[in-house]
Image 1: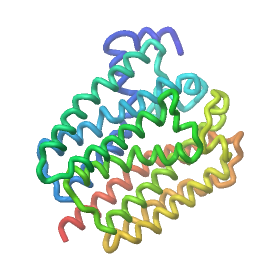
Image 2: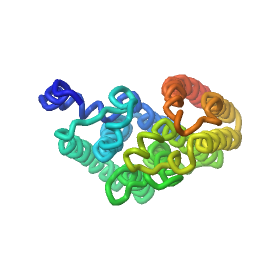
Image 3: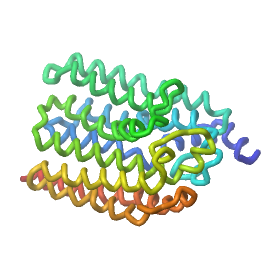
Length: 305
């Protein structure tokens, strides 16, 4: 990292920008949307609960998740050519403490409010709300924090990462006081399969950097080709599970199939060429926007039926 970059990052404004960048703004919607959609589609109203928890899953949650990751993945990130943009910053060592404190201090007030809402709202099961929130936060911390490092436990890394994105939806259901139907459980299971597939494919591009940094992952253990094929299988399973959501929810089964097509060309990728899959990952980021739009239209249709 250049001296100019270090100086910029240590200035207050530059430090704030770097810390905020570590939360991956491009991915904020990926956690706020599942909560908001699940909450509203389950009968929740736009009010304090909706606003507070949507904002929480939009920014603080992502700062906690990715901030911890960027601090404790510093050594491998230095070797990773894709770091330094929308796919993640390389935090100067001088910002590590600030990032961790920012993640914690921005999270705690929202969690306090979430607990108060859960225990004082007569229409929700407080235990279900608190349990869902606890699992969500635990998964975020366990993924990257020293001593736990679930991201270095093959397959468990994909399961934990998927929990990061599915658990906000479960929190939304709990805080709306919903009793999920079989169709809702099918949709959640499909979403979980999509999350596992996406994490596994995302890890492929980092195989060489992770191995150089001494970091294990589903991709470093199984290799590029087998990991891509595993991700394809998960996307296919996601599509099949979505069929159990009933009409018209089953139409969303085409979404994971689009992701499957996106990565199919890498099914024979050699480990040494792992960085080639970054092109597929960049398409994945744009595909998320398209998929989100299509799912939103489908949810509107369901809501108006």
